[in-house]
Amino acid sequence: MIEIYTDGACRGNPGPGGWAALLHNGEHEKEISGAESLTTNNRMELTAVIRALESLRKPVQARVNTDSEYVRRGITEWLTAWKARGWRTADRKPVKNQDLWEQLEAVSARHRIEWRWVPGHAGVPGNERVDRLANAAIDALHARTLR
Figure 1 (cartoon, helix red, strand yellow):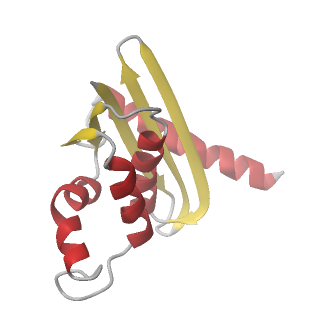
Figure 2 (figure 1 turned 90 degrees about the horizontal axis):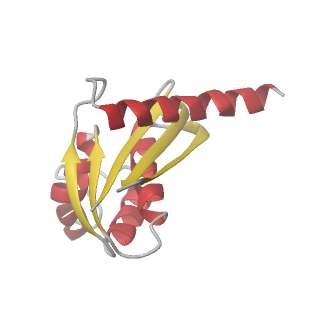
């Protein structure tokens, strides 16, 4: 099983944001990250999971660890109802981040995934690592824009 940790960060909401993922398979580890100049925290949380799953070359069994209940509950509980209602919430408002939810659904379909929530900023090593990586991606973006 591939162990995946993901996180998104945003300075301001909206504001500059970063995302990161750590993929661990036995002896092998891979870190990926990126940033956007104007985004939201939820978009970065979703992007982290999407990019992690896109980086897998073949269908796998994976455990996705996220500190975002929005991501975990969205993919495991809410998505089916949103689609049945034509991408509307229970109170008939448009679902935010529909584009990313559609991407996450598509990229998830080829894998067997266990979705696990982990507490953020609580000393979980994988989660702390991706938090640092996501914030470093924002710092790198900021440094590039100052040049």
